[in-house]
Length: 195
Image 1: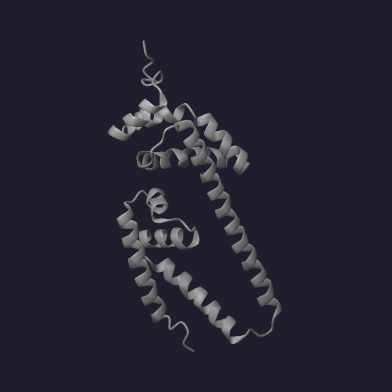
Image 2: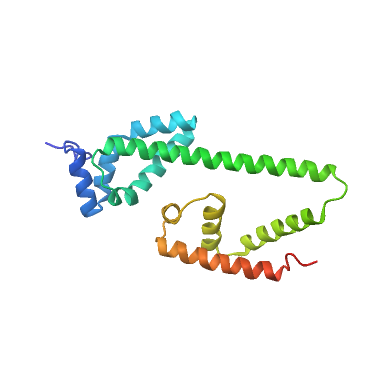
C-alpha cells in the first residue's frame, strides 16, 4: 500500500515528468523533486559555499522547474536537473561577482572624487546622468522598476524575469517598454546633458 505522503514514489521519473507536463499538478512535481532535493542542495552548497544560500537555491530551482520542465524534452530528469542546478548556481555567482565589481568600482570612484579637487566637465555630466537615472528608476511604478533593474542590472532575460516576478513574458515586455519610455521622459525633464 502506498504512503499518503508519497503517492507517486514508486513511479519512474519519466512517467512523473510526462504526467506533470500533461496536468501541471504541483504534487507530481513536488514528488519528483523530493527524490533529488539532496542532490540539488549538494550542488548549490558546492558552488555557493553557504548553507543558507544553498537552501535558497533549492527553493528557487524548484520554482524554475514548474516553468522550465514543460518546455524541454527531458529524457533523463536527474541529469537535466543537475545541469539546471549547476547553471543556476553559476548565474548566481556571476551576478554576485558583477555586484561586487560594480561596488568596488563605485568605491574607487568615490575615493578618486574625494581626492581630486576639480572634475572634468564630462565626469560631472556622467555623475549627473547617473544620479538622474537612479532618481528616475526609483520614480517608476513597482513592476516597471523591478523589470528594468532585473533586465539591465541583473542581465536577466524576459523568461527569467517572468519567473522571478511571477508574471507572463508579455507583461514583462510591456513593463520594460513602458519603463524605458517613462525613463526617457523623466531624464528629459531633468534636462540631463544640458548645462
